[in-house]
Every structure is written in structure tokens, then in C-alpha cells.
Image (cartoon, rainbow, N blue to C red; front, side):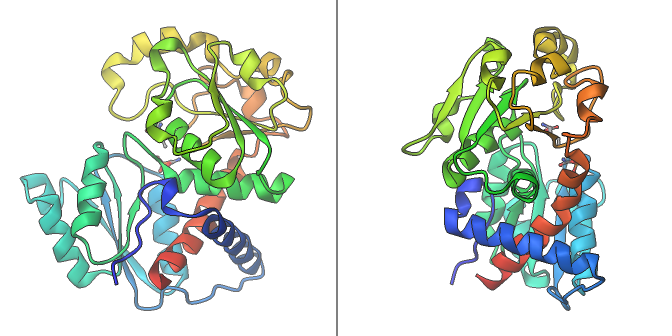
Length: 301
Ligand code: CP
Ligand code: NVA
């Protein structure tokens, strides 16, 4: 049977996403009691990184260590990928020796090619197009603080980037409203991510997107790979900073999330990210639990 992959949020059904999120919270509760089930005993995870990472690398590596397995970090510099070995050949070789592969790449087509050639599960650890592991942790965090996200309003403010694209997918899988506000220059290609009914809108005015929101989310203005246009991006995105004035239009108990790393004074003020309604540290911590549950699910499927 072909392996299950997690390249996009659409790779999980609504029921499967609910199952993974519930399991993530259960594993988190067990860990708090010093109970670490050997989910990955003698399993090996290969981790390909074309770009930098703190949270994604550490959470996957910790997940494997805590679960009784191991993880191997492969950067371009230290592997034959950097010397031109095709990604498809790499996928076949790693499938002979490892039980699952994660990859953080520039082109989304690279993880698709990896998945097409691998005989083990492949997980998208961020591409220019999507970052589904992060949104899984975000939804776990929302659920733990406020209950299920179905029927709630999420406001995405700032750049229409890989995180925003993933929120468009997740809104459909998990049935929430998504109000996006970006500069017209950075509107995400919403229709590329819509399948059937979707409660997803775009408005250039951030206040209108945030009004009545249960959750406000932003991300960096300059994603990895966009450094050359940083000044231009910052100038256009400046009116989209999430500050207390903007948050005051959301519901009074609205949560704030940011996948991190954050730039206080750019996309978010210190007052908002360090506020009691900001759950960014839980959000980061939940990467560990959500990915354990995801790996367990994919390895079983
Ligand atoms: N949020 C996130 O993916 O962080 P890293 O880039 O540190 O992995
Ligand atoms: N949008 C950001 C997310 C970093 C975790 C980037 O791609 O750099």
C-alpha cells in the first residue's frame, strides 16, 4: 500500500485532523506526567533542510528521541543533494534506510517529487507554498485554549505567504471562517487553495478583517528567500502591523498567534505578542506534540 504523506493540510480529512489533534493533546498530558510512550522505537526519521529552522528541526528531533527512535539532519552542504543528486534518487535511497522523511525546501515541487519517489511517509516541514505542520500546532493550541475552531472567525493579517495559504486550506478542512487582510500586492492566490465551499475572504483593510475575530494571526514580513526585497516589503506591509489598537476590534478574549520567529516592532508590537492573550509559546511547544501525533498517524496508515 502507498504511504500516506502530509504535504498540504488537504492530506488530512476533517475526522483525521480531529483525531491527530486529540492525540496531540493526549500525548502532551502524558508527557506532563513524565510518561513518554515509545511511539517510534527503532524508527529513523530523515530530515532534509534547504532553509534554516529552530522549532521545526528541534521538535521533530525531540519527538523521535522521546519516542525511542532517532533523527538524521541532512543539510544541502553536508549531503549529496548539494552536489546535484536528484531529489527522486535521494527519496529512494532514504526510503531504504529510514521510516519517514521530512523536508523544508524552497520549491514546493521538491517535496512533491520526494513524496512521489519515496516509499515511506513524507512530511512538508515548510515550503515557499505551505507550512502545514505549523497550522496543525496552531489548531491544537486554539482547541486547548478555547475549544474547537469550527465556526470561529480567524483573521490573517500581513503577508499572503505560505502560512496564509495553509490557513486557507485548514479553514476548509476544519470548517472555520478566514478573513485575510494583506496589501493588494501580497494577496494570496486564494482560488488556488479553494476546493468547493470555503468561508474565506480578502479585504485590504486590516480592521475590517479583525472585527469580531476569535483568533488573530500574523507572520514575518520577509519570509526565507525574500531577503532581496526586504525594504520594499516592509514599506508596503507597514500599515498591517498587529498592535493593540487593531486587536481591540477583535473579540475581547481573542487569541493572538505567530508561528515565530517574530520581529517585535515590525509585524507585531511587543505589547501584543507579550500580552496574556498571546499564546505563541504554547503554539511553539505544541509543534512537538502535534508532530508526534502526525508521525504516529502516518506511520500507522
Ligand atoms: N515556525 C517555524 O517553523 O519555525 P522554524 O523556522 O524555527 O522551524
Ligand atoms: N513565512 C515564514 C515562516 C517561517 C517559519 C517563512 O517562510 O520564512
